[in-house]
Length: 80
Image 1 (tube, helix red, strand yellow):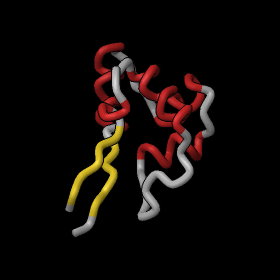
Image 2 (image 1 turned 45 degrees about the horizontal axis):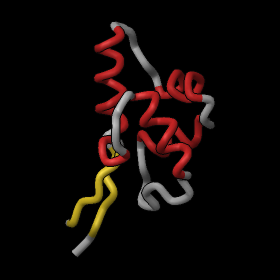
Image 3 (image 1 turned 90 degrees about the vertical axis):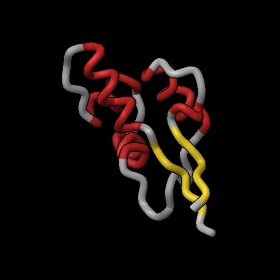
């Protein structure tokens, strides 16, 4: 049974863009959060390595940016 960490990043980005009435690119998220573009891209488009190396502080920053109350709103553990 394969387990996967699933990212809600793109859904949260689209929801925030709709709420604020503007386009929010991955570059904009990186710029507005002061996170490295590579890190934000990894969150938006996880590879086979998933979220290897993503720091808790990065998750906290993104939760704050997207105005969610839990890391579980940003990423989710799913059994395959």
